[in-house]
Image 1 (cartoon, rainbow, N blue to C red):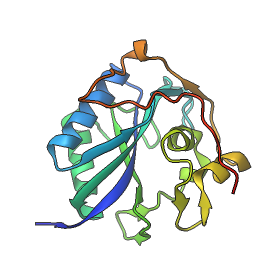
Image 2: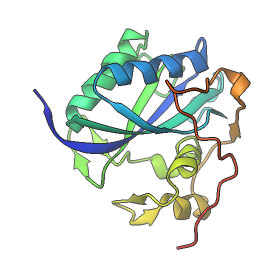
Image 3: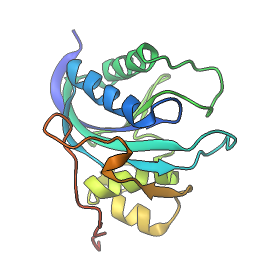
Length: 189
């Protein structure tokens, strides 16, 4: 069994096929069933695709989680959830029912053939930065040695990000907690 010390993981979720909000809700539930406790959940954001731009806009969110799973086991779990929901990896950066990325594993730096954490491009992606800013603006990137707030302020992220309202299919309630602080204070360093 690949269990050990409890780690705070930040996960980025995205979908741009089918019921985008429903896909993300299902993914959150499946993560919970597989040993990943959801501590915080960002609001839902509609974001433009990067790379392959001739595809529908994405719905994205970020989760703060905790789990005793190792990072490599968590990667297996997230990829199994993606497959179970119908993800096929046929076009790189193309449309997908579900994408789950491990953004951070506590303050650990992991570099293997199959996994790099922190995610190597998260500081360039507003679809990850904006939801991270909402739930953990003071989180320090262990490689860049900067807070998420500072990275966001520096403006290196790309892509338009639009906050969606609750009627976009992102349910409120105890099963899927939501952070209602839509105005975000970016703390000074």
